[in-house]
Length: 378
Image (cartoon, rainbow, N blue to C red; front, side):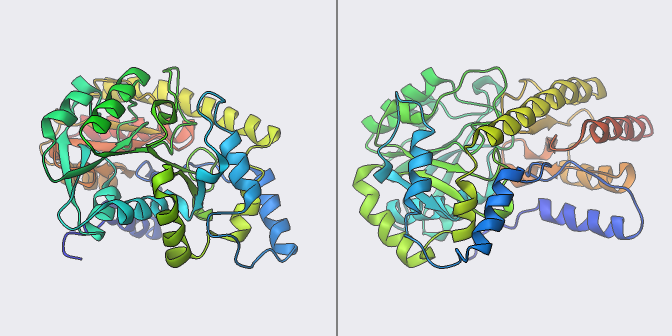
């Protein structure tokens, strides 16, 4: 337990709740969750599943109908066999099983810094060592084939890529992903690609890493794009050599993912649901297109326009060299909640904060005005 770090943004959230209890109007831009509720067709299906008493254990790898729909959602050019699709209790449950499969104590996993903080803790949990590679705007805040090769050593076992990324919203281009897959394969390691924000991409072309080989672990989720965060449901596409291991782990660690959630998710791919999800994606893009220029106008440095997800990782060095204290001041004095850079790694974390634009356009505009007033008085 010693290396397992807390999620520091929760401290900001607790302070925000305290301020709200005192009657303050807080604009929450700190959390990594869509502000939209689960689409109605999914919710209704979940209610029907409960009414039909679908509350018992199901197959460890997921109900067959859902596994088939997930497989069929991939393009024909990279569609996996349904046998390689497994349903998991969120993408977090899937990542834990992957690292349980791969890691012996002391094995290293390469990750981009900045990145999603819980990934390092999953690695620690199984005795592994997360090795962070500083990744700035010159590489779009992502690992590259060259940076992976330069960092590789005898203890390196795997590489974890998130595309689109939390906290930067950056993606790995299809061409670079092909090079990364070839490099990791050549070096004898295992590539893991987290694609949980794949539905939330704006303008920039992206494709699943399944195009680059059937030996890659693909991680995905119903949380972000499908708006099912509290249902705790995700999936893996598993390389054939690890199927038996993942089956045993699923049976023992989880028995199965939530039964009502799985029956609800059968309607995540319906035409009506898809239309609603596209409407939401368009709204996220409009928010991004307003919010990033507005932050730049305030004096934040954002070298690259986020290409996906709903985050902005902003350089606040024009105002402070202590982003943790700056985040708390924004909360207490401007009543705007943001996530401090220390949650996302070590590389220049003291001069970065993460904004989430998973909030209404009205609230984003209000937050910009509040920050403008705050900065003018400091």
